[in-house]
Length: 326
Ligand code: PBG
Image 1 (spheres, rainbow, N blue to C red):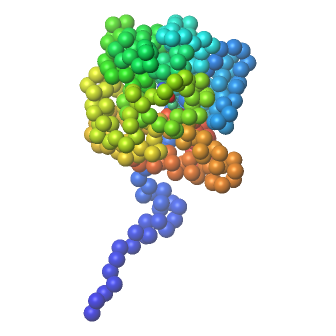
Image 2: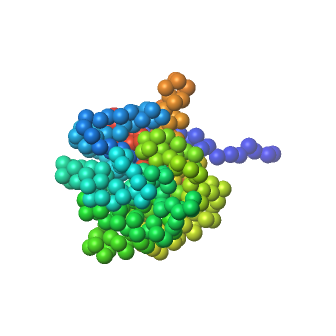
């Protein structure tokens, strides 16, 4: 006689309490890094049209925002500057009095416990909108490295706790590590955007940061979304050059890459849940088509399940709030 045999997986799903006990992946406020955009001026709270709930803030309004962040239990912010003036070489990126430097000084003065990460790139500061020096339509690699080193040092001098270079020039981690060490900032870690794809998911950010390239695209320095082995090569060289964290960006369409990076390297892995991933959800939620809270929690949990230790996300405040009211 043949007998029907099978496993009863549903035994472990029978109550909320039991499900809590056997849950494999947990999202906490400690996982979250909140991006902020800072602008010159006073009393500025400019909404970013394509990112509902995201604002460019002037320094005088930062305390209010940071109070909220800290009271929600978020431990870290990443700062993006939107400068008043742009030029060919992005000089405001490495001015001691640049908008990001001033914001960092301000935040560290009022919230010394907050881990402040500085995004180190030139595209918001250059008149052409590219992440490096441009000559005859080409984005030059090696001459850009010196500017990145100077930017990182000025950010460290302002009090940044972590430097996060995002420009995708070859050797940028080596150049920044060298410059930081020479200036005496040997203790400042580098969170490298090691695996950064040339992605259409960055569209809304370029609205927020006024950083769209004025000609061409970023395909000659950011990665081709079709490539997987290349991600491992990028991660490997950044680690060899001295990176302390590896970022994979974007997150949602790249969970396979996150898992690859986690399996192959032993430093903290960070996902950047980018602007387009945020705006898609906001738009659908505003139409009443999805349950925003449940979708966001599911999405961020899937990133952790894929292997990330930390998530940079515009949803950080929402998520921290939902976690504390559970
Ligand atoms: C700057 C930078 C970008 C993002 C973060 N840093 C945009 C880009 O490379 O054009 C995108 C972040 C987001 O979409 O949320 N290099």
